Length: 239
Image (cartoon, rainbow, N blue to C red; front, top):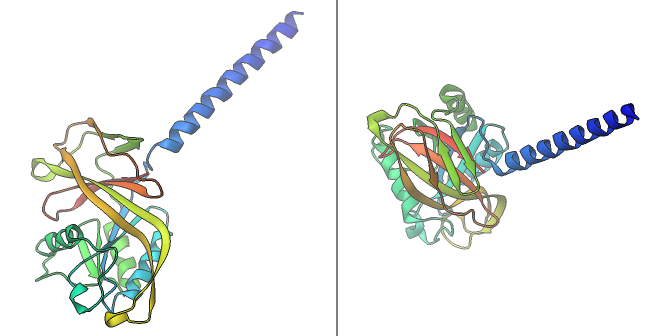
């Protein structure tokens, strides 16, 4: 009888352990990807004849583990007869803010910026690969994104303050028929298209937890911690 009671106790312990593991698994499923990431941003336009190869390159790069690939549609080619259906002025502003720190005279497409630190023409994938290898991953400060809470670890921040950007993007491949402009008659595939870019706060190097907007159904969420005015990206997380 004593052995039977012991077995029962062991079964109870095993059940409790399994329940705890399930709870941990559920929490992990809700948390953001805590692994260091390389952030690859493509600035593109459906009205630019040089951009389709860059879109294809971003689609390929987005499949790689450890890479957060984001496609930003810019507005300045809309004047050629086709209005990019994904472009927004704030994405154009983001690209313009990069140009001075990167040593450029002005924005161009297709432009790929890696970790906010260096750029290359986006239709040459070998050069993108070289830049990704050179820039590595961003991982300071540590980030944890769970539901609507972002926890930022303590760390160094250039200039004493960094911006916190909330990004939503569509990880599906979307095909867009273009009826006018330089790409007339072509159907252009897009992936990881950014749908919103919102500054939700600032970080001063101290550990803190802040509320972030709710996730948009059908879209993924990313957080970028970035030095102001087109500075380097310090950390990123996606959910």
